[in-house]
Length: 203
Image (cartoon, rainbow, N blue to C red):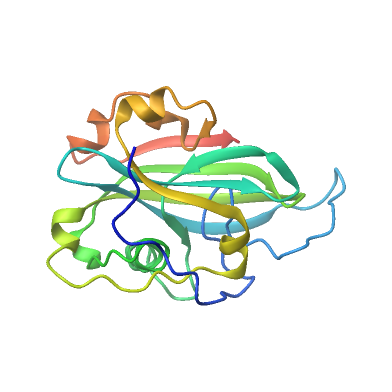
């Protein structure tokens, strides 16, 4: 497992209205108060990128929940849609902000997967409707990389950004989101043009 060639520079603080992942360090307001069992979930739209290199490895992020620091997980780059933004535009924006790799929306393949993720983060319940696209580093490397810009919450909760092969995620000792990344990747590396609806998933 190797890290990307350039360390992300968390130089910008994003707004608390933005969700940049599910589950994980993704836009929940810092220092949120613990929620009651009856708390209404925060509902968001999101887009994520299954970003592959020339060796078939996937770029994934390792993070943790500050309210549950013993819980670590791998997840894919991506985030919440801004007002008026398309899923494709959000996916490439979040990829650049989190990793520095720049793609154009039309270079994404998909959406290959669609799901609704139900999770708790910072003691708050979330419902995030997500679409997953495939991107390739070969397309991104035709242009200069940007400075990755992490929100304050991402600085607090992101621990590592790494290229990982399928066996690495299959055998990872911590949680992997989505869990399908522990299985064969043929479904998105050899996409048949049909979006798979994963339904509602509790994480």
